[in-house]
Image (spheres, rainbow, N blue to C red):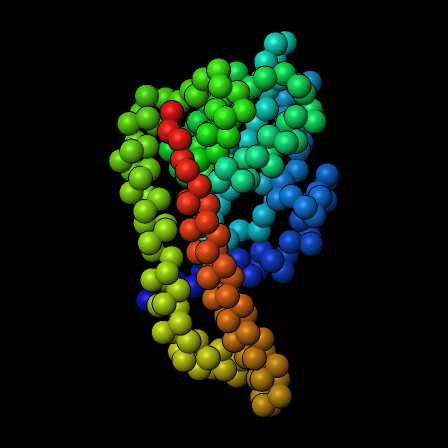
Length: 215
Ligand SMILES: [Zn+2]
């Protein structure tokens, strides 16, 4: 059985999300814009840790144009970032730099290509060699691996329930009520994790269904 740790992290993140730094946090988007210096802005992702990760981005506003470092896990997320960039400057994006081949750093490239046909996508030569090999394999694994992981977690449900009650018996005072008060929420969290994992699978399927234009 695969580790349920990602699910637990997702849940922990959801529970702790209200404690995250509040700077410029808006409920309608998953990131903040931190001004690092004149013309330099960091897009810091604030989503709780989960099954998917999202890269931070950087805007460097030059005299004539803009350089963007890394894009996002999906075109939709990248469009949100670009919308905020447009509120900072009307200068065109001339360069997009992909630091490496991980999905969350380059899938949104196409959004900048659509919006700025002259944009140059810049990366290390090794990144372009890795993209169709390691990158493609990694993405296929993420898409195909999640449903089987969820199936494994569902199979493990009886063990999780027994385990939750055993742990609750050990760490709570020796009465049945305390044991239930700990074990039942643990089981509910597990179910919630499965629910959210299914939600992620559907979202991913939708995102990858968007036509991907490669540079
Ligand atoms: Zn990465």
